[in-house]
Image 1 (cartoon, rainbow, N blue to C red):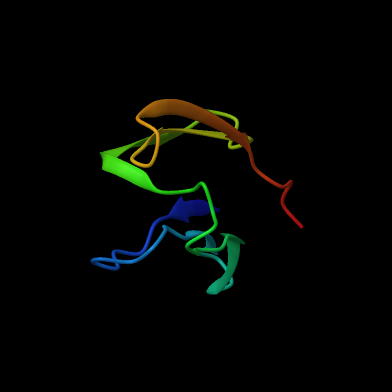
Image 2: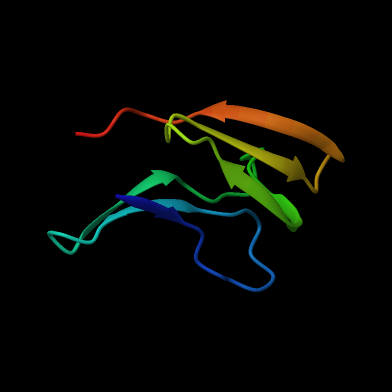
Length: 73
């Protein structure tokens, strides 16, 4: 499994997707939206080694955020 952020220029927020290379299946983990706090700035983000958390620079409030990701299905 791997997580990825699709590049959507000028979007109100970012999306985070999980992709399973073995099956070709992908699922959205975090949805974009104007009311969503998930807006990564400067491309600064990383997934923890265990895949359970994402840390990112939030372009809305200029703080570092940590979010817990859902467990794999």
